[in-house]
Length: 479
Image (spheres, rainbow, N blue to C red):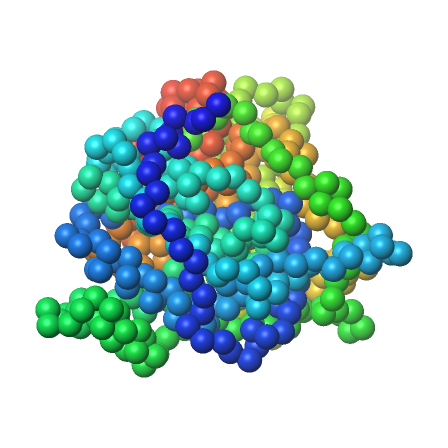
């Protein structure tokens, strides 16, 4: 049966883009570190920018320039143009997975249109996430990171609406984390904006104009080049890490989260300040030496709110896992430009009755202590344990605990900075990937100033209850 939403998308063109030229490092295998490998069974990252308005000639003023800037960007982010490769060690029942930067067709670039007369307002006026949004990424084709053996590690889909454009980015999560994803998007935009429209002359052919733009891209200086560090492993290990599997069906399982409602809730900078003040005021009664951050207060607020409307038994356990960028927590610290996965999965746990009974400050302290405990020693200890006994992340219900609230994303990412000659994006939207009951993605609010958007995925009955929860709704606003 064909999904009716897929039928609303018409593919105009599709091509694959390779780096403008080959750098020496791309001739060698790109080794995957523990934090890269662990994502192999999970979904890609999918983030997209919605723009109001589109150029009169979308081919020359957007697509042609995007091809040139993408080709130049891939010179710096060369692993994204490669493909995953596996070497098997049958005697050991083990495999080595790495990125072969010399094979594969390159990054995928899709130009599509919405068959219906859909507008930007149509996408934003839905109470829930518009059902067509997943098809704005890689045409809605579902995949896991391990599929990077046959699918591109980077895909960009440019979809025309009646009065706007959506640019959807799909990136393999075994190659990069959210920090690296937005670093790439910012670099792509930076190069794109240097290819000025006025460089197109009415007196030259399209081929000549494209060549001029391509030559110009050679002179563009990228402000933040990615850094490729050797995997941070204990002495005597690596760079090859063998995984204790032989065939993909030993660790890849396709996960169907069932019927969900997905909705975006906005929290203003004023409401964020109120949450932070409330958490810190409550903490004065517990320990006056703790200062709760905005992130910790927000995380506690989300955890408590969703747990409350689930109406669980007080004796049950509830968890709140969340990723933390550890580049700055290692000694010496790593640059934020280090490309790859540098995330630690932290987790807080509490009995439902304790979480709801002790208040916002107490929950925020649990999160704060989990964050503060992550230091150089803990990171190195985990990496050392991993190389001695490698494993991959679990999928399905074992990954998303039934009573848990899984936080993702970051309000620190510069999501509204990248522009492609279309002005500032009016919204940031995500695709199908990594969605399950209790998944919450934190994005910065469009107006900045510390505001945030929460993309929340819940079972329909739980979302209905959250929308009726007075305490939660007193801090958020909706379209």
